[in-house]
Amino acid sequence: MRTVATYSIKGGVGKTSAALNLAYLAARDGQRTLVWDLDPQAAATFLFRVRPRIKGGGKALVRGKRDIDDAIKATDFPGLDLLPADFSYRHMDLMLDDAKRPTRQLGKLLKPLSLDYDLVVLDCPPSISLVSENVFQAADLLLVPLIPTTLSLRTFDQLLGVVAALDGRRPDVRAFFSMVDGRKRLHADIMRDLPHNRSDILKASVPSATDVERMGLTRQPVVVSNPGGRAAQAYTALWQECHDALFGPGAGTAP
Image (cartoon, rainbow, N blue to C red; front, top):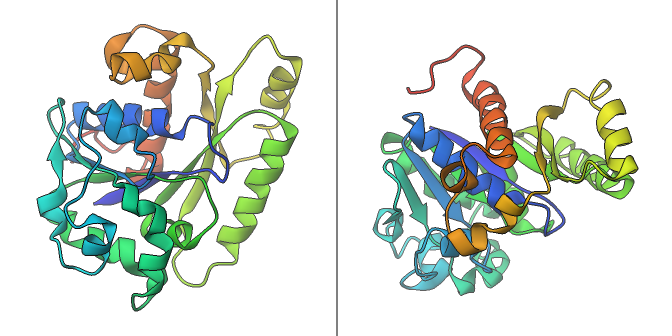
């Protein structure tokens, strides 16, 4: 089982949209896929048409009083399941802080699922916190949506510094350009110049597109609602790069 986390220090950069589209594409390719919506705002849970509630809340999961298998819900898409958000996740830092080895609890919770799933996608809340440290320990790939602006690049470099300073296991960190507006000169300049110097930025870029904005209305990945659109093509290319990073270039799409 491999784990990818869509993560950003900042909110509103397209991480949930990426998580859902990549998860759908993975499941379509034969990967048994689970999305864990760790954000108390529950955007991914809403988009998958699932009620944002865990019986006993996040505390029951963290303390082992609720089996994680019992909290998992099916989605409308074959091979794709969801561990929904719960509003109690807003206190997740406190729940984790009370546990032994508090930075490794999420990975510990996921470990028993390795026989059931090939890929876990973590949709993470925007922050630097104890939840973030758990994500860094649990993820094989940390996928960072990056709006092509100077401040976003600075924030990404700060994140790289945080991950580099971790003790023990560290994820592979890759960014991709998100919410790209081709009419903006700064976006075009940064996208033209930066990838030649940065191996940690993927080639695929997701445009600022109506299809992505309409996910809240369609409650479907854009690769389902408009598979021929620019955004769907971008997510498909992004999934291929993520697949290669997780499973190795040339590996089959299904295990």
